[in-house]
Image (tube, rainbow, N blue to C red; front, side):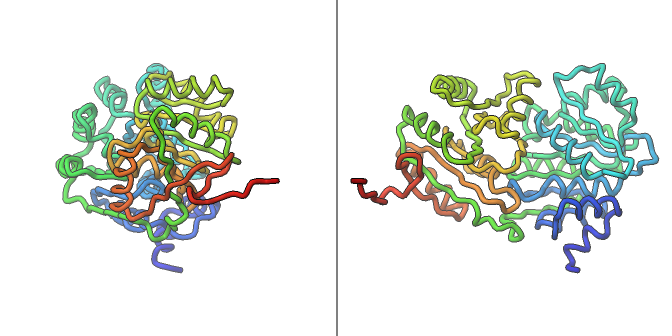
Length: 386
């Protein structure tokens, strides 16, 4: 047994059982660093690329600490979007099987009465959006006096002006001997600065590239196109064989126009943006996840934390505003070493920007074109059939 495998063996037996059932072999790099640190009650500030197993890196040691005999809340996990909250809850339920540990989700916009009913069932782990969690604390419905661990998932999205005060108040409402853990795919300087204020002598873990996951399974390609012609390329991508494509657009206006044009051409797509109600968002994600639609068109805000298995292509319809956004978006495909393709639809100006990103991130972006319904190299020639 390797040192890495021992990390899981040393956790409670129910975790090891689910690990074996899931068919996992060794922990990923972020898991092998973070799990022991969190088990030892250290505060942690961790950065690792999207798709490297960050959720389990904090979830397994948090579950390991929970006393299922106690009826009080012992850990709070905060996330910036409803979708991410629900995904964390699903993972928590999967990994706590047979342990007697209960979790509950609390999100803005949901029925408050129903959420209070959840608290009556005495969850030991609370997973929620900052606004709603703080609201329940202020109403004295959510008691924080036994909370030992606070987790900030996608920390760079939580430590922003709209959430920061709520986060600080939530952390302050817990035990003075609390543990604060922050995870993110990117950690800008200002986020590290705020994270240091919330933590005590935190162990900073930075994984630039996970060597346990073969990253060379993701291809980065691009098509040169005028802005107005990008829709034709999206149309062709939607018709690729066995495609499951997540398409990123910069705002709701662009998304609506693109979706309407595709639907007019009888192309069935799902959409995801922050102005949609909860039911419509869930329906969109479900239809895309189940393969009823080959393409999900989303804004960056709505797609944060979205974890859908087997996404074959991530498409940058609107070019990312910076390198961090490129990393976040692109990490939705090729998760845990699966293969995937990242497609950028770029104008000449954006092509220069993409090449800069590629150089900085250490990959090569290859230009392609369509020949009929196939993606080919631009110089590839085809003989005419007689």
